[in-house]
Amino acid sequence: MILAACGEGVEIDDPEATDAGADGEEADAGAITIGWTPPDITGVFQTATDFFEQAAEQASEHGLDVEVLSRSPETHVDFGDQVAIVEDYITSGVDVIAISPADTEAIKPAIDQAEEAGIPVVMVNLLEEQEDVEIASYIGFDNTEAAKVSAYSVLDYYGGPGVLGDGEQVDVGSDEFLDLEFWEDLYADVDLSDIEAEGVIIEGIAGTFFSEARLTGFREVIDQAENVEIIAEPIAGDWNREEGIDATETFLSRFGPGELDFIWAASNEMGLGAMLTAEREGRLDDTGGSTPPDDELVAVFTNDVTPESTEAIRQGQIIAETHHGFAEWGWFGTEFAVRLACGMDVPEFEDIRPRTAWEGNADLFYPDPALRDIDWEEIAAECEA
Image (tube, helix red, strand yellow):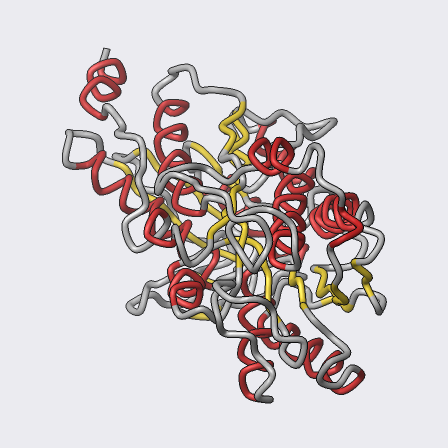
């Protein structure tokens, strides 16, 4: 990876790269060029980038010349840098821009510029339609629903029905989606007063769309259980592992053994930071949810699901995590971008359906996620026509 000058972002997984000029890397005039900009270069977005590139390689095997340019701000809070990256993509003449926005409002002026330049935009990591901007396709999930799924995992572990802890165990198929519909149906007639736990929250960037949506969803479910208490104000971890470590250190210093049952971190990087810190302090619940909770230990729940966190789930170090579909972002992101460049139709919304990953179903997610086949031969034939 290389760091470029301010406004030029970080190029992802390109050890041979050098600093780009003021206008960024030029698009290959002979290829369908996709300008992809995630909000940072963490494992979460590296996973999406890997699958953008895998889909592009597969397209090229079927006669389509597809190039993915991947650049991000150095950190998740560099809103202006992401705008500058999009502006550079416009100047360099990419065919399609794919964005996972660091902040939905901050990126809108750059999307307007893309529209004026006739460059379609695919929005990744989001299903909620954005006002005042033209988006060709949304690929993602409802952030509020995803956090609700996480909250149900907490309720499950601390006495409710489901697949964790010592509550009523529910038989689920090895390939069954434990999505919001599953959890809401399961809990429709459950007395939540029997569920008891005390926890804390590590949120993302305070006050931004993604963080607020996830906080809202989590609290909407948790607050229905009168004996599940959030015992401190959320600490912002800015979607960052180091900040997640710092937040966890703060919580563990405030609440000793027996005073804190769980940490919900609203993203994978922050959750991994929480897991590593609790483990270092000898306070991590690493049972994978297969036994009743130990009130001396702290269970970690989080959101996203990457290859790294899936392995932590297999090892029992993360009790449950809500899948957001990073592989799908890149896979469908490339397909839809190519279709748009070829003048073909794309779905306005591609819903990833957030769902619970836990020790019993981790193999559904990584290292080999099941992805829908893309008919590149059909796309290539229609594109040439």
